[in-house]
Image: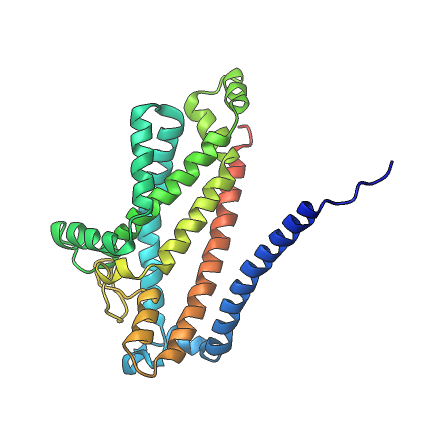
Length: 282
């Protein structure tokens, strides 16, 4: 048999796919390379453990880093149970007009600008609930932003699990709850992990919403009720409001990227390990 020559359209499509891939990879490499080039000199233990001095031009980012992790922890503690429960409800327990209405609401919320979430969080958490500018307010506001994306991704993963899994679980005598916990969620773990990673990325990169909720204070928080400045807010402040703060801004941005990579890696590992264990028959 003779191999047919590749058509011109196939060759062009392949070239376009490769060019698009190289463009995306090149832009990412350019971004990371620029951060490393300008921020590597700041990346040392003292920078991570010291407090900011001289409006952030000198010193380190210890209280900012702690505030960032606390805000993210509050956001995840609110997002994971609510997001999983809602996704399971939409996928397994409801259908029709109600489910479509919830999905439409989630799609609309996913496109709402972050500044709107910031104003909403300020009105609800800071003022109405009396939390003030605090880590609680910032984390719960981020949770409101993360939920639409996490719920939609998790529901899509659960819906993609074929009915053969459900029928097999029923044939083994598993209840709906047991099948969900031991079969469906582990099967949908790639989508859950992807949704979690995307949500973490959005939370760590958020600036506008946190200015209105967690605040600007750069001291070390002693409780979740204290105000705390996130890394993204710190980078914005150094770049826009502090003359001579570019070096510290680059260093903080590099720490933010590394933090995102580490947290995402841990989330992927723990989620896959936990959910894979649930698929083992007891």
